[in-house]
Amino acid sequence: METARGVVTEALPNTLFRVTLEERSLADAKASAGKDEEREILAYLGGKMRMHRIKVLIGDKVEVVLDPYGGKGRIVKRL
Image (tube, rainbow, N blue to C red):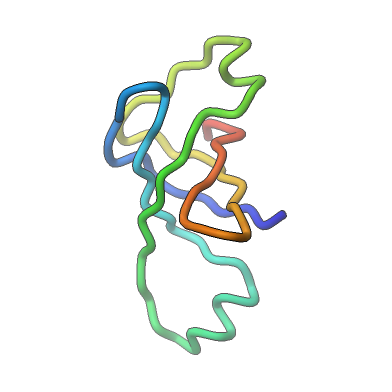
């Protein structure tokens, strides 16, 4: 699983968030060859964050595990 860091830009209903990714994986960085582009994805809260009721607000830096098939991710850590 690939992880990335990002900033929460929008809070949506049902613990969904719009996250702008800051870091890309090494494979993406090599493929883009110097292009500095930001990607925006939809992310949901991971199970332990829901269980322990950790609040995520707009502007928070988070760590996201990316889905290999699409533009979704799971927030696993608030930084």
